[in-house]
Length: 62
Image 1 (tube, one colour):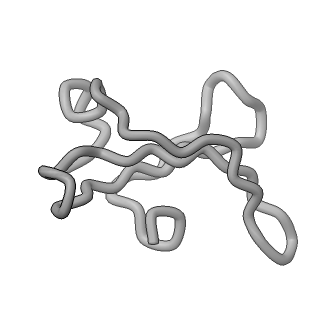
Image 2 (cartoon, helix red, strand yellow):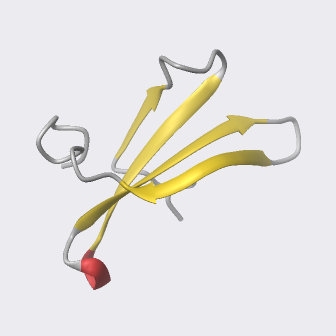
């Protein structure tokens, strides 16, 4: 869900070719889930998934 329909999608500055997808999760108190992944021809390769404490402060999720 986070990769398919993120609130915000940005290139990952630390990893060339990777993307950061952000999505608020209401069931977890509107915390922001960050997924870092690479797009591949037939799928996505997920690198990390975690709740990003600073995403709301930085305006990365609406």
